Length: 479
Image 1 (tube, rainbow, N blue to C red):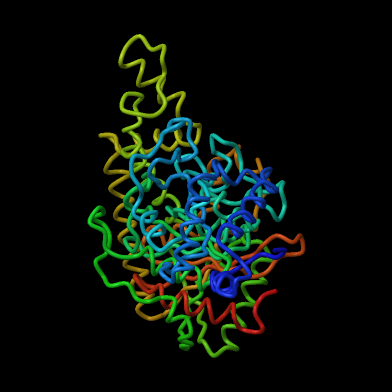
Image 2 (cartoon, rainbow, N blue to C red):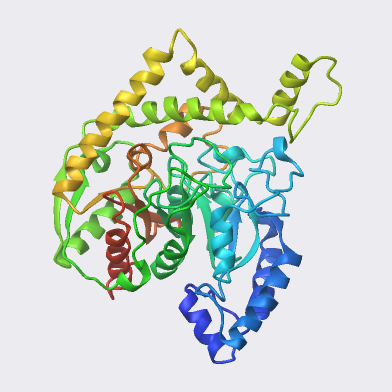
């Protein structure tokens, strides 16, 4: 094996011909992990359980009883619970915590015979856009090891980029699947809020968090969505809508009405090479028979403030459970209960998490609740209504994923506001709960990956996936 396998179909074909086995495939990926250890993508490799799974899946393949994902070696972000395995959300607060149960997404992967190879590094409690806030240290981008991989699902994205597993699960609260996928040249899909169960996913901001996928092929993204989506008795926020067979609907080459958010392409912050690359893609869309229209979206300046007021408020509430008493990190020298709480939380959480908890507690406090939290909810509703109208008139929206390609490690850590503003183009889908996707557009002159973002109406993942499949499969596609 000397080349990257980019799609499950290819792997399953080789297994069917007897040219490859699941244990041999797992060994290959384990070698790749060892070779790329310096990228710091994995917090832990599940050697024992992955090897046992690989043998069991091969037996099922030989018996003709294997599930849809047989042959898929997949990594999971370190905020997704897997029974009898450690999960830490890349935080000291949950160091050595072993999950007593599995997340619904993990159960569904195992049911269809995927092999889970390990847990992947991320920003602490999924709070960050560069994967530099992890207790386990920063993840490095395989395209340029002095640059960030994006965050918070940086480990998930680098694992796929550097061929350490075929696919990976991440979570996307404000762009945490799409931005790392863009920085690493992968395909990143954030489904509609409620399309996939959040049960067993360590919460950051409950009305935003959504499990997403990072893959090298649109087909694998569609297949994973088939398996992961759908109703779940353990999560009351999951949609009861039936799940289409996304993978079989990829070849619907419908001509679509595409809206380009004008202000995003006119933004002074947008990298010139990235802008040129997106403009070329838009020309391709037109040449392929789609209609492309520039539309104005004048609420852009309100996206990041509304997003950070609401998510920090939810984080403040969700993270109050980590108190040094029930489980997780505990200061052993405190002389009183109050001191125990203070010291455990001060020592267990990193700087970025503490910053967001403080912000969230502030906006929820008695004197400021109406001025900040209540106002942000009203702005969110306004943005949602505006987007619903736009997506009634158009099938897809196009905008960048991030203003620039991957930036250098340490470049934005000094000023949190500069880091937060890097989310300006991704939080739109998060605030409104609509599906969005990052698609690779080749590389710039420095060989850094470039990307374009597509958004569609609620539960219109089929439209996103089939359009992406058509675009990336076409002969004139990006190199």
